[in-house]
Each structure stands twice: as structure tokens, then as C-alpha cells.
Image (cartoon, rainbow, N blue to C red; front, side):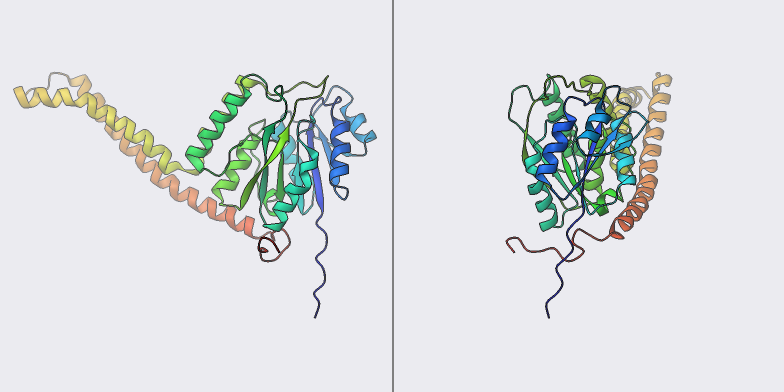
Length: 321
């Protein structure tokens, strides 16, 4: 008996925008050509130029998010739009739309939950000064703390399954949203992949909204916060160990003097080291308690994720078939 052919996947292209009048028409046209069956959504984030009018004229469906910040826009898009496959890309025309079919095919053929378009520069002006170093620094931090599965955690070019989008809490407000997306996939052990994609410079008249140092520090702060929230035992164990080592270092001269003379002349230091050891023990205990809470929370997130069918709704196909 011949089984019915699976229904074609509903693909949505999500484009968060803020003052992208110079580039958005090109982005919409390129993705319409690359993914003819996809529905293209442009979400405006309080633009003061003609981004909305240009996007509509190009044929995109336009939505709005008034809370300023890319994280707010992504949260709104993920909540509003229903599809099987989601392609998220910035509206600055720096990402290669022609790579979208390959990203979508990789997601569907291997039943992945996220495919990241790893940026490969095609122009020397593609990265602003300091961005390349910042990206490597932040990517290395995430790889060290959460696992070595990504080489470009800040890429804005990603393809998601429906189960990823509808199980993602989206707590970030700004450009740190890409880091949160990456850590969410790593902590739930989702099947993910990277695919190299060309990355070019912005068109003339378009300016980057990313603030190199301010947003870089916000991303670093988010990484530390996620590490504390997702791996509290490791986080508090490191702090407790450092505090205990400092206390031991301060107490060594006190013990040496005591064993030589039988006296403890440095009472303030003795009291300080005792307090440091107590705080160290309390910190480790907090880590143990929070680790239990985090494990239960992670199990709930995993169950919510598994409640949504995977791409294609069936077992993963073997490569080459």
C-alpha cells in the first residue's frame, strides 16, 4: 500500500527590523526568490524611517513590537506566527538568502531543531571594528561553559523547528537573544548543526544598531547569568572553592604562629577566615539546593519541548535517502 506523501512544510521567514529602509526591500525580494513558498514576515520595532512602507510594498506581512530591543521582537514573532519551519534573518541584507534552501533542507532531512548560518566573510567591511574579536571571545565563553557545538553564537541567520520556537522562553530584551537561543539548545541537548554561509557588508545608507562595547558587556552578563541559572552547582562550587582557598591562605600564618607560641595574636584575621569558610560552605550548599531545582525545571522544559512533534512528524531519515 502506498503511503500518502507528507504535506509540504509551512515555512515562515521572520525579519526583525529597526530603521532598515535602505535594505529591507532587497531582503524581502531575495528570500521570496530563494523560498518561493514561504510567508515573509517583517516585524517593525519603532522605526523612524520608511521601513514599514517599503516592506509592505515589497510584499511582506508587517507586524509591530513597541518594546524596544531585538529580544522583544523575537519573542513577539515566535508567539504570533505558526509554521513548521522558521527562518530568522536580520533585515540588513548582510546574510545570503540563496543559502536558505540548504539550511531548511538540512533541518528537515536530519530532523534538527536549529541550524545556524555560520558567517563566512565575503567582504572586508562585513565586520565592524572589534566585532570579530568580540564574537570569538563570547563564542569561546559559551563553548567553555556550555559545550563545544557552535563556532558562531552571534549569527542572526538561523532556521528553527516548530518545537524549538514554541518551547523557547525568550527572556532576553536586546541583541543577547542569539546567545539565549544557543544556550537553550545546548541545555536541552537539542539536535543542532551549523552551515557556513556568505556574510557581506551592509548596503549604502544602512547602519548597524549593535553597540560594540555596551552590547558586548550585556551579552557577557547574560552568559554569566545563564551559567548561574542553568548550572548552579558548578557556578557556586567555583566561587566557594576560591573563597575557601583565600581563607586557607590567610589562615596559614595564624596556624604557624599558634604552633610556635601557643598564641593567636591576629584575632581579626582569624575571625575573617572563619567567616569566609562559613560563607564558602553556605555557597556550596546553595549550589546543591539550586541544582535540584534547576534539574526539575529542566525536566519540565524538556517535557514541554517533547510535547511538540518534530519536523516531518516521524523518525529521522538516514543520510542519502
